Image 1 (cartoon, helix red, strand yellow):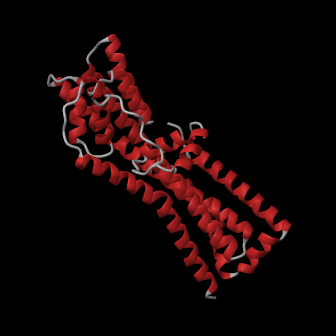
Image 2 (cartoon, one colour; image 1 turned 30 degrees about the horizontal axis):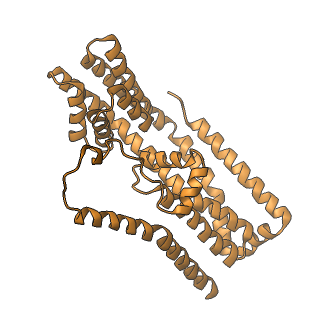
Image 3 (cartoon, one colour; image 1 turned 90 degrees about the vertical axis):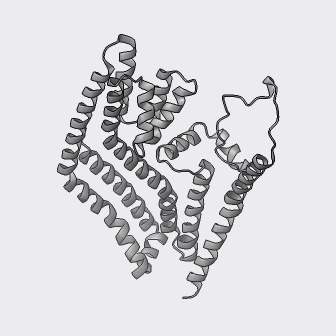
Length: 323
């Protein structure tokens, strides 16, 4: 009985040590080097050609050379991960996120598949463990955008009131960035900084719509750009837009209330098979061992996983009502 806890502790220590040695230590050393240079550098006169450029290079996705080489060959996948982390407001690099997911999958596979001797179940558990950081980031992004939708009408009203008081659109954006909480304040702060530091307003608004993939934000960008081309009273347009967004949000809440029973049922049905598998793995491991070692059992597990995923997708499609 003491072999399994010892294996667990040893594997956990190895994974944590590798993570600290490969990810945490290089990034901390790089950050300390930059801070030391900033502290020790004395101010000096620079010529025009020696000044810092206005346009900076894009931040590195990772400080690990091997991961950087792999990301260079992965196409736009690292950029999509970076967009996911930015949308979820997670201050973590892409390299640390990817390496953490891989180490979590390896740790679960070693504990479940090798130490416990259940290869098939260990592989499935490793895939689930490696997907947990992505699931967490997507869930955090969804909650953040949901809060953004709640705060967005108030931001539009504030911009409209500022314009009726005689201020420009950029001043209204700055007021929203200063007075409203997260996440609306942060996103409008970026929008204000983009157009304040030289980016044209249409380009900054398009960047805002790409960073916040919410339908209401696209309505706002379309309304502002249309008004700039055709003219009109932008304050009145924003007032009407805020009213439409509030009505749309009210309908959305009603739909969520009406579909709550289906969503709860789908959650229970989706969580029941993994919960039963975990229970039998703890209470009767010989049952799971039989499924993992017998060829027919392996086929049954694969078929059950495929049908489980298909069922989850069908239930999700049924309970998500377009509005």
